[in-house]
Image (cartoon, rainbow, N blue to C red; front, side):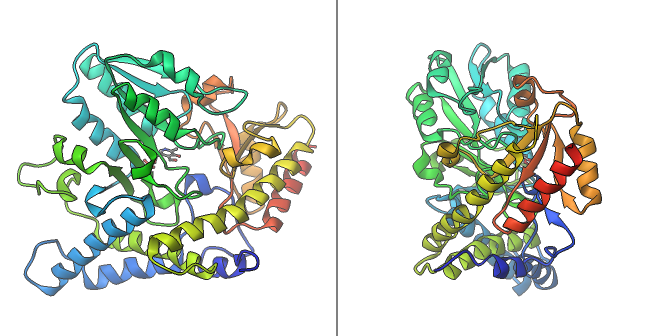
Length: 410
Ligand SMILES: Cc1ncc(COP(=O)(O)O)c(C=O)c1O
């Protein structure tokens, strides 16, 4: 393959045109046509519950099973039995925290981070309050922008039940050494719950190989529908008490899924995985879906990260602007292409509004990474201006936002 087929990629996404520049991707990505078509087709042909004797119900079962198998491929799971689909990452985490907490007692300890999105903090804080658990806070290092293993070690105790941490930050974009941190926590007898929401749009997740116990992500961040997806070790998901109605299925994968499955969104979820597989094929991969998914992610990274470098270089030319994350060219492999900034003379909300008027979508605020904003000493309500690239963005779009920001900030 020569070059990333960005024009062809963009043609898959009806929302992408010249008018709007989508740099709000960490808050939600645009959707390829095949996801829309699959969702509509499921509503037309399989708008039925599971388990009936008739064709529409059999079709709904096929969609359900197909989506779990697809997500097993995307997340590197052993099988679709390890996949739990729910409303959102946050909803799944609240639910699983309840299931886990049933086995913990007052005085047990849990570790949460000052880097995570609230989706992987609030559920655990609430559980701690209800069950009398002790909460230990793990901070990220402001020089390296990531959680350093030596900072975890002193927090681990014999009665540490859980480490909850993110794979990549939705505010700074930095990637944590999750395999190393997971091993330390598991060696100490704790479970590890990883939030991969911001990693999954940019890097191939290999959940089973990573060494954690649970890993959650959100399909609407990787070009799919508004669904959350959780991977869990089969042995744990089987044992764990399920927060479900009494007559719900007791077997995996349905055991931890509450209520009737969102069949049309599951069809869209499979289609999102198949979009990635299509991209893998398009950049020259052959073989099974997992092989094509890996190739797609490699190609996406090879396209996105030079764009992120170009963005950072351009931003650093603007006087007084501070990038709140890794800028060192030698450390780009330690971040995703989410670049947050602050400027002493401008509020991020006003900048985001001015950019929106120019057709450039970005996000401002703490972005629910409340503790990270506090840890960085940022104005809590105004937070950062966050520019988040996806593999459908172009060098021209990067240059456009840099020149508009330079003009707005002069
Ligand atoms: C890192 C991270 N974790 C969790 C979430 C919450 O995901 P959901 O909207 O699926 O609950 C987000 C949403 O932005 C996020 O960026």
